[in-house]
Image (cartoon, rainbow, N blue to C red; front, side, top):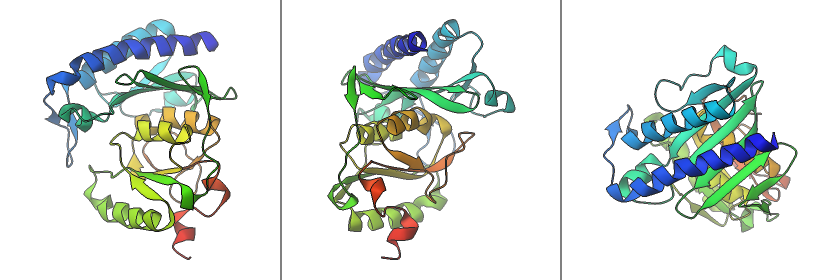
Length: 264
């Protein structure tokens, strides 16, 4: 498994070279459906590259990805190995030259992610974890913060593609602005999870995310000492989209679920 992890890191950095070399081109986006939901030629190009190279690394693995018709979690993905890929998390950032944009790869075993790797090529940051072995950034161990909610920055994902969730997003934002230190928004859920695992922020939430958006980050965060659930505090099922609530070691020791904060 260590050799596979090293192989994933090598491949994701090769994909990152494609992403960073294209960043100055201000790539045109094609609407995928829903407000502000775009895909560029580089999303598809990087995913195709990753699938080809990861297939060489682990020939028996299945693939789940945001692009190219691979987005559905199927029954066959519950057994054996499956890669879950987001070729560009932060496509809107990429289109506008607003960093960060990252590449995210999770390796599932029997329906559960056990390796997560996320690469920010613009700062050459590789975040990675394997279950039971801790979380790292560029070889250095990382740990979530021990600060309580009132002393923590809260990251929010705005679910722009789903208008029905806009009111919920801003109601929760107001709630966490009241009880946390302040709010932050990077435009990349995968990167937000890395910041949480690194101890920079204390909590991240988004009303809905695709599996490829959070699978790798979930492994990294849990190995860094975070607690990750849906917004109701229920365990993630890792078989499709979900709301996400991830709290650092310090925040998760106190009251942080929306249902609890609303009663204070």
